[in-house]
Picture 1 (cartoon, rainbow, N blue to C red):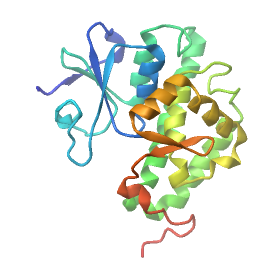
Picture 2 (tube, one colour; picture 1 turned 120 degrees about the horizontal axis):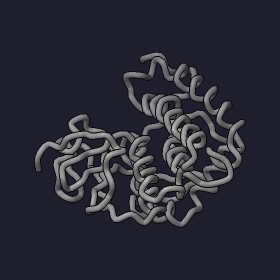
Picture 3 (tube, rainbow, N blue to C red; picture 1 turned 60 degrees about the vertical axis):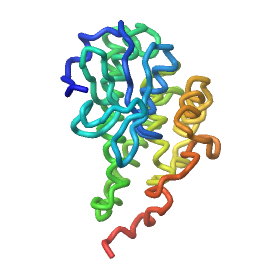
Picture 4 (cartoon, rainbow, N blue to C red; picture 1 turned 180 degrees about the vertical axis):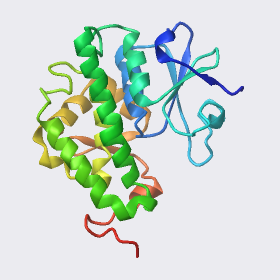
Length: 242
């Protein structure tokens, strides 16, 4: 498979079968959900760790040399990266379905997607990494402040009364808090959002496809827990290297 080129998501329409590359319970779950919600003709392939081989036999390093998911690849060797961008591209295949089309509303949606990517996704992902243990408290304090802000905006979804790809992204990222903290029960509207989104048929189908099982009223976990999730993170305030 040749090394693929990257491109501007706005110039691509889904006409041939495309491939979405994911990892179990990663942020790419949001894109998997969007594909199923929209009924798009996209093949979803899981990328294994540490081999980096996808379920279609592809060496994922040839798809995305940076190594992370999601990646949306077309037969003409075009690749789109970044969950926030892929989600917008997928929603645009059926305008008005999972994102608003009005100019002002679309700007608000783009703002929310980028907020999730930069203020929640990135910080929570770093908490998992041992090299950031010394600043875990600071990362979680920043996430908590952002969740305070978000709690005040939900109505009951991220963009108002209607489910959107932003809610799929929030579900995927906030599910990590059961391992990283902070305790999401501090934010009742966020817990309600998780429950609403998790109950959707397309979300249930995506969870089953990724071999994820329900946990409590709002969360989900791998049926076979990976090693990195079996060791609990230290309590907040106990982050100094030993």
